[in-house]
Length: 138
Image (cartoon, rainbow, N blue to C red):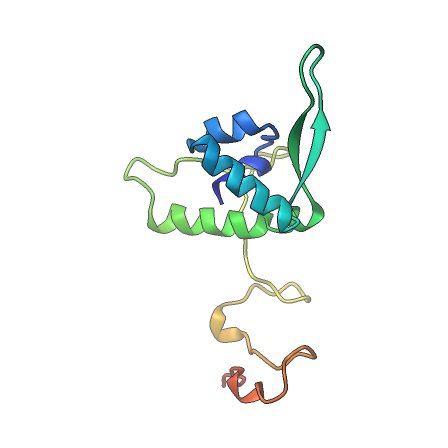
């Protein structure tokens, strides 16, 4: 998650990932390789004049789709694990300055609590698993 967080903050180069996430180069290499393998980051070659070609790492569409998940985890941490002095990082909309947050909504736009959501079998549910899916709550 740390390297994904850094990718969302705009980090692209190996040394910057290692430094900003405060992990070893070996850990950085292993995790970046996994993020590329899983399709969350792309390796893109770049070259600074007079130096060898290196790779930078850019979020893929699949990786960018994890942004709400990261924001939700940060939001949870801010609510339940922040220091008494306050949250370590504030996310704000660059356009208006309002705080950024994640909520669960239906397609009609209603904000929902877990008690207002029913889990129903979808078309990809394997045969015989329907009894494992939560029934609608009343």
